[in-house]
Image (cartoon, rainbow, N blue to C red; front, side):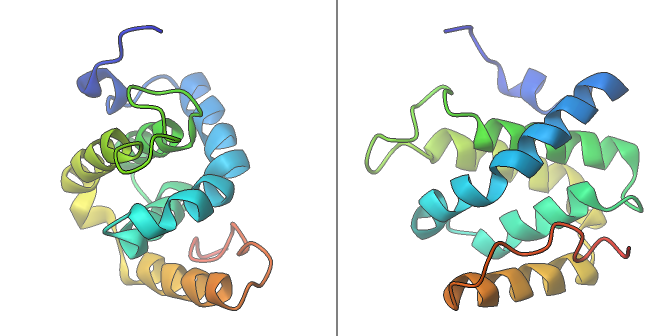
Length: 137
């Protein structure tokens, strides 16, 4: 496994890299979130971060940081494999916490409202929330 440094994960990259990360995040976010939901101490913020990352009104730097952190979250192989009970998502939580600290001012009420709606849908076992919710489109 390649050595992964947190500073590199959170650095926004090229447009091509950001597009690849957005594609990975859109594809794997809800599936990974459902597996990790009971172990994430800040589920609402993670989902709000997802909507913030996909919101075209979010500044490019903040989107890049969030997409990098969320891409790490959905990666099946990372520093601590997610399938390890009790500790599998600790590295993901650390990366997400650092990302949220860096972009805190960019998380808007619309992102939290979309997150609340997504959580309500998840609790009702509705299909995955619309990825455009909360992005103003």
